[in-house]
Amino acid sequence: MPNAGVFPASEDRIVSYFADEPSHVTQLRETIRRFMEREMPREAVRQWDRDRTFPMEVFRRLAATGVCGLTVEEEYGGVGHDIFAAVAVIDELSRRGMGIAGPYIHCAFYGGLNIGENGSESQRRAFLPRIARGEMLFAYGLSEPDVGGDLASVTMSARRDGDRVILNGTKRWCTGARFADSILCLVRSDSAAPRYQNLSFVLVPPHLPGVTIVDIDHLGIRYAATTDVIFEDVEVSIDDVLGGPEGWNQGWRMLAGPALDVEKLEITAVAYGIAAAAVDDAWAYSQERRQFGKQICAHQAVRHALVEAKTKLHACRHMLYHAAWLATQRRPCSVEASMAKLFIGDTAVDIVLACQRILGAYGCAEGYDMERYVRDICVMPIVGGSSNIQKNNIASRLRLP
Image (cartoon, rainbow, N blue to C red; front, top):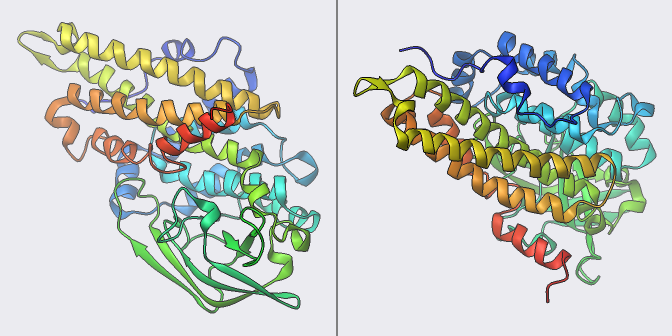
């Protein structure tokens, strides 16, 4: 049987874009699509998933196209603050899994956005040109064994000792810690200060003495291990505090600022891209597979399932790119970003599971990408802020008592 899931003809895909999508974004999509066909063949992507890793050389070739600079201002070597285009890159790459989309996020979003929005001038000049060239990857150290959504309750401590900072504690679900150049850790930096005024972000290279990394086996998103990272009397400079010395106890402001709104969109773009790939595969398979003397797409149950999936995907697209457009324009988008994360994270699960049923047993078999889509999509309503957390965010920002 032919391998299901080749992209439909380009004229079919063009109608799926916004009518007013900037022309440079449409051209960028074509560039990424050609890159994927050349550098990310389906069987190679499946092998990366089986090996739970990604090829750094392929990511470097992606970076050579300049896309890592989409979240970096021109004065620091980037191409400007174009979140809409950066989201489109994730959307397209995620159609072949997170093998390269993941590292792209670790560079352009975890690195570019946080350093650009909250870094000191010396940090911007030291890091952003390298980020724009794809030379630095970052990991998040936010959650802890007893801290998930309530990040203001983190207990990992940071104690100042002259121009040094001493770190102790454990971070959990720290994906990419083994390949990251730096872990962006949210720490409690003042035990006496009031809640929300006692947090800082610290940039911690994972190779420092006192850092121990322990892998956690997990479902889906297998481009990298997620880990516990244990810090025992780890010493960094006060200049490694995000924002420099002036960033001390400013962590909550940084966490709740524009960078976090955009962070919701990158994982949402992954969910959308996976769902789009599942629809493409199911759409193609339904025309190849014959049962009871006709293509299965001629059976009403399959036709309706495909149309419902396509319709839900269309709604997801509008929510994602509306929020991305607001972020690019630097307009307030906290509510829209949380709504997109909530709706797309949950709806994408429905879409992918419906597409899996269209493929039947083949949707569960290794050698068909659908089984990977299912594994990956099931974590999307959880990672990057769970659906329930997004509901709380939306209610609070809309001033619901």
